[in-house]
Structure formats: structure tokens, C-alpha cells
Image 1: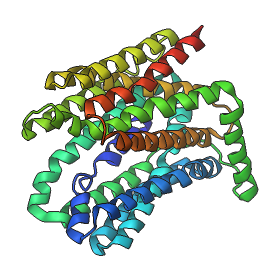
Image 2: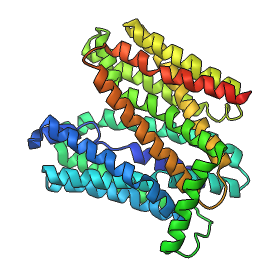
Image 3: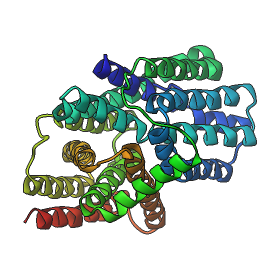
Image 4: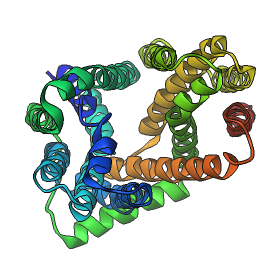
Length: 379
């Protein structure tokens, strides 16, 4: 029941049909590009502010409770968008969406690891999380594919209600997740103690700190670059109808990487470093080629980065001790958000002066440094 529920929850979290069309809803409501950008900023800021506090809350009360509440907040935001479309309601919806994501982040990984550990199956964590991540990518692709015909048939109301329904069902699935930990007495003192313990462990324990930084950088850089893949595809000169196929190829690569996480769980540190280095080279070569065939090495690179991200999370969970697991994991989530925003900012700053291929190539350089540091630490 545990693994099946984790998989269904991961799928439903990404099976949101409104994802591909909500910017169109903004446009049709009269929201300008500048206003839309401010809404995205509100979304990001909400996640940044609530990431670590919500992780401490998950360690203080019930992680299953937060996994239940997270999708409901997101679904409520979507429902408000449909009922009262306006700038301030969109802003409120993004606050609810950001809060929902913050509640899930850290809670999901902590519950999964500790329940598997309780069953003596902690060694399966990489396999489970790799498959869950891949299912999320499949759900995202399916949602994009279904959004077109559903939107054509029923417009924003049908697409929106389908998204709300996915959130509600996801919340119901959360209630089927087993949780055998005893959170202890709630209250401000315990909450602050857990928060301090988690932050202290992430900062003072060198092994945990390295794992936190590895999760943050390995996950965030390629995750942010993925948003610009359509622009890179257009730059190759292919027909617009071909670009979705290039995006699909990249998703296939990332999905395969997640599925390979289990077999690669005990990859030695030097092999891990080599994987990062080769993936960076493949991404740079594919992006700089300026040709559609370059998306083959790009897909391979994204698969390798997906694999490396899952393994980095495995290393982090193995190093965390004590009752503040979700808090420490949320610190890694905060780091991921910060690095992601940094990549977005760097990409935007470079866009007037460099092609997408060049920008992709430049932003792969941090992976080379990470690979070198990982190889050095293995020695």
C-alpha cells in the first residue's frame, strides 16, 4: 500500500490539466506580461518563505496531514481562478499553490524514507523515488496532451475542474499513506526546537551539508533549463510542429534516468562525478550544435541529471539523523528554489546577448565544477 500510494500521489500531483493553459487564462482576463511576471514572483516567494517552516511543521505534527492539506490548498487556488478571475485572485491562487507545494516538499521524502526504513526496505528508496519522479514526468506529459482536446471541448471551466479534481483525489490518496511515527506533543516550543535542530544539522554536519548542496545544485540547474527547451528547439530552425517532439524526446530521457535510479543506487562517488561530467559535456555539445539531432545528447544528459538528482536525495536521506528529517529535506528544497531563481535570472540576463545554445552551454559549466568537487571528495 505504501509504495502504490506514493506512486499514485506523485502522478496526481503533476496530472494538472490547467498547467499548459493558465497563462492563456491570464491573457484573456487582461493580465499583462509584467503582471504575469509579478504573479510568478509571488509564487516563487511564497515557496521560499514557507519551505523550511513547513518542513519543521511536518516533523512536529503529521507528515501525512501535510500531504493531505497540500493538494487541497492548490486545488482551492485553481477553483478561485475559475470563479473570480482577476489579478488579485490570481495572486491569492499562487500563494495557495506555493503554500501547497511547500507543505508537500520535504514531507513526501521524509515519510517515504522512514516508512521504508521501518519495513527494513530503506535500500529501495532510490528505486521508489526514481519511479515516482518518472511517473510525475509521465503525468505532466499526459496532462499537456489531454489539455488540448479538453480545452477545445469545454474551455477553462472543464480544464480547471479537472485540475481541482486531481488535487482532491490526490489529497484522498494521501490519507491512505501509512505513518507509524509519533510526532510528540505539538506546541511552539517543540516546533522551534525541531526547526533549530534541522537547520543546525544542515549547517553543522558536513556530510549533511554536502548532500543538501548537491541536491540543490544538481536538481535545480537542469530543472530550470528544461523550461527553455522549446526556445532551443525553435532556434534549430525546425518546424513548429516538430518542437513538441523534441520536448517529448527530452522527457523520455529524463523519465529513463529516474527509472535507472534503483540499479544505480550504490554508484561509487567517482562514477557519480564522471556521470555528471559526461552529462554536462553531452548537454553542452547538443545545445551548441544548433541542430535537431543535438536533442539526442540533450535527452541523455537530462536523464543523467535526473538520475544524479535522485541519488543525491538518497545520500541526503541516509545522512539525516534525528526527528527533523522533513526540516532538513526542506532546507535542500529551499536551496533548490534559490538556485532555480538564480538560473532564471542568469538566463534572462544573457538572453539579449547570446543565443539559446550558447546560454545553455554556459549554464552547464557549474556541473563541471560539481563533478570535480564530487571526485575530489571521493578521494
